[in-house]
Length: 449
Ligand code: 5GP
Ligand code: MN
Image (cartoon, rainbow, N blue to C red; front, side, top):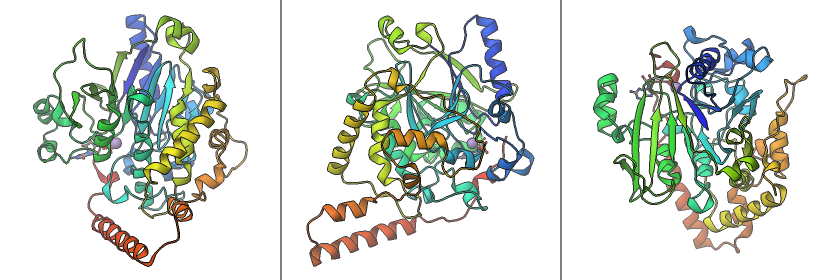
């Protein structure tokens, strides 16, 4: 399967698809799938301009609205994550993933899908420590502050991705993030990177460049590929997964362990933004499924266009994690391990029964331009509804919160127990306060180069 990877898109859909068409002409081979690593800029019309954080000179519609209205059609299946320049009102409607236009699928705040036999997962947004523990409290109309915080990565979503689990739960073939996982700049040709982006030197030296949760996910998921954008530079790196910490790897050899396993490697690639002369697009050949499986799975290896499918494990994670989705500013606290394990295995049984065949996993092509205003996007309603979840309640965080559930399951509290709980909570709040916003540069004020 030929997979094209794009760095930042910035609304340049026409130019990106034209580049793919030119590559097809040159090579005679069609691209099956396009992966876009954020700053996608999916503005449906002028009404969305108030919901994107960009300097005034970049407040332009871009090309996306043509794909939304049907004036143009995406020539291949396109999957994207969000960055820090997005129509955040639109993406928030589809926070659990969905079609933003025909053939263009947003992975949500976080998500995983299947294309052929590949599991493709992603995390939207950029990491800012002060907003990390909070719920998704932002809603349009945004003010100056929420216009930016809305795209900051949340612990809840990273925790969900961690539930994709180890090798036994299926390999994560591809992971996408907008900002780079921390530490990755040291796993490639660092000097060449610093020659091109010398202002990154201090951050590379003190290892503060990139996303700490991204690094955690890289360690936990050990995907075969990790694609990123944001720093507007092409940068390949190779990561060896040994002793739980990413570090530079020797070039991959024939006998390398499979993705996810101890000793496996991740091929990392960051790309630039879509401008003439920039390295913004890379086309890769990804292993196709076995010949027999190809026909069953449909898709490129079977001769047709690849089909987008739900990932069973991700559906189970979505179902089990839904009660912990919250929209307040309180810090997210994951449930206890044993409770989560039980909820996950119940959710897996539900998903196995609801989706017994590959065919039943196909993501419905249910994109519509709504005729009337709506409270919940119909795709989100359908997706969560199929998991037995009430979309409106889930999105409002009305499902029972972890604390409440645990309290109900626990035996009668003792005075000592309550005191130690209170002391623990106080320590947590003090720690949160220490990490509170300190001001400084706003994301939208970083110069675009
Ligand atoms: P964007 O296109 O998202 O507005 O901005 C991307 C630009 O911001 C990059 O070209 C880079 O110059 C800058 N940038 C983003 N993140 C960082 C960071 O963590 N450190 C530094 N020094 N620059 C960053
Ligand atoms: Mn960016």
